[in-house]
Length: 193
Image (cartoon, rainbow, N blue to C red; front, side):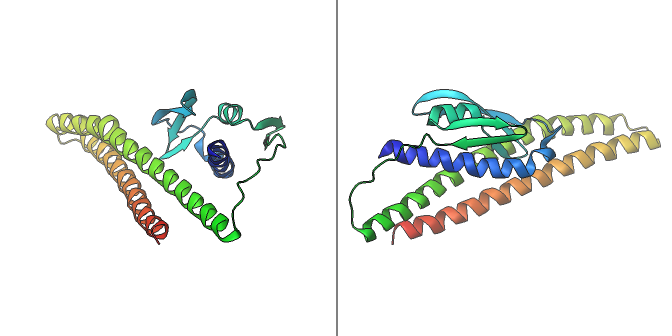
């Protein structure tokens, strides 16, 4: 049963990620990878995931191989299929089965939300450490060397604009974290009913 649930979660991640990726793949061209995460399946490392604009992108080939999902490429389309084997569920009454399925779906969603929170927290830290901190240092240098010319003022304005953009990104990521926290609380309340 654990293999079935693990496969179901990976399948959901693959298919949900594929839909999101298809919609956003073109907008990712030229974007900076903000970080990476090791991806493990059943305790074995299977690859690395890239963090781009606050979203984590998993390697489809590695995930499909680990989960036993067939993968084919036709033109610019990636097709994922199962091998056709069916897992026979435990025999339970319909009400218990429906409740277990709902609780499993809720637990899977909570897991996804918690992962998204960790990713966004990492992205915030990266943005603070690798973008804002160096920009603030540069801004201090520019202000110290400011000779009152338009070039000096423009340089300062550009750096201040980049800092402002990074702060806006951090605010957006924090809003995503707050929304995920709120959704987790609602889902946990449903589980405790």
